[in-house]
Length: 142
Image (cartoon, rainbow, N blue to C red; front, side):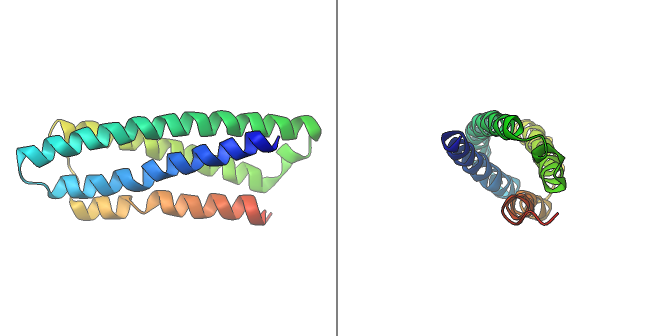
């Protein structure tokens, strides 16, 4: 069970590393004025998005496996409110990741509608989600 938990944490870190840096690339991309920079950011964003998807898939897989192990030990685990809120935040994180994919496509095709300032605010979302998820898992406030 500890191996599953360890790999879950490793891939959560991988996923968050991508989601914390990808929107920062969006900031720089929105500020880029020349074609060479535009193409460079398109490549960087695409590669980071793919790595983030791999981290996400493995984090979710190991997380579900870990959840299944806990549920096999006790049916009270799944009834805990903190777990439901944490899973809700994970769903929000997945939606955020999907929206990052849409932004990557828009930036690649020159259809970006956001300023670099808007991307700076967008960049803070995964950090807030990370804080919420970690607090829920460690503190279990309810």
